[in-house]
Amino acid sequence: MKIQLLGTSAAPTWPDVFNRGNDYCYKIKEWKGKNIRSRSQTIINDEHVIDFGLDTFYHSVKFNINFANIRDIFITHSHVDHFNKEQLGFIDQVCFGRSFKYPYITLYGNEEVIKQSKLYRRSEEDLKLVEVHAYEPVVCEDGFKWTPIPANHIPNENALNYIIEHNGKTLLYKVDSGPYTDPKLWDFLSKFKFDCIITEGTFNFRKTPFAGHEIYDTILDMKKRLIEMGCIEDKTPFWLTHIHYFEGGLSHEEAEEITSKDNIHIGYDGAVINI
Ligand SMILES: [Zn+2]
Ligand SMILES: [Zn+2]
Image 1: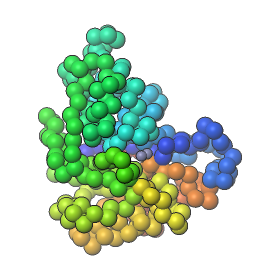
Image 2: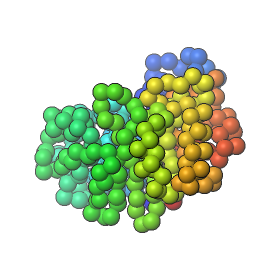
Image 3: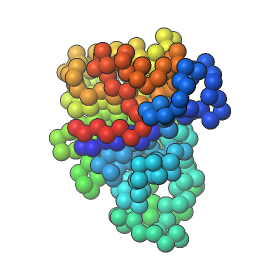
């Protein structure tokens, strides 16, 4: 399984278009390399896309990705950094004289995402919509199995994370969720052996928890618990994404010096993870 992180920031980008000198980022003098982050999006095996937010255009240009070749899109929730509903109006082969690799693109999402998609899509033939629910897996035609699980993010919507399985490899993809607290979910996770964990690290080195997102201390708790349950080993690839500015204005490189001691990688735009 080839996983490419296309965007690794939280909703504000790095740098934030409104502020390049605030408390969070003042230390970074030159915005370049891994210190430029766009909004969250990931592509697997060049065909399965997770989230379709505001920076999809930027990712298509930056990483030379032709979205006409994708098979499907899995949306985590309706926040605009993950789901740019207006962009759905351009998924149309006839109107724009295009030809997709597959007859149509399928978009999977929760009730809210599907409701909004119905309002904004242009072509029912070219964009199929499938509502998904936690603990009810879907299997794609190429054998990819996607199991939605409940994120701990917002009270008014069933935000989702995904367990993705293919060819004997298993990935846990967790963005926009605070720590998992539901015993049912932990019991469910205990049945898996993961080959890679990708989790949000939104508020990273802050010491005070922030509702609906992770800080580094709670990420360490999660890793420890997964190891204790036998779901992962310490050396299992473990990556952070969806990152707000690092506390104290650290650069990517400075932050990774800290996390590497815990065998945790910090994602960056364009990173490829093969498992
Ligand atoms: Zn987000
Ligand atoms: Zn969100």
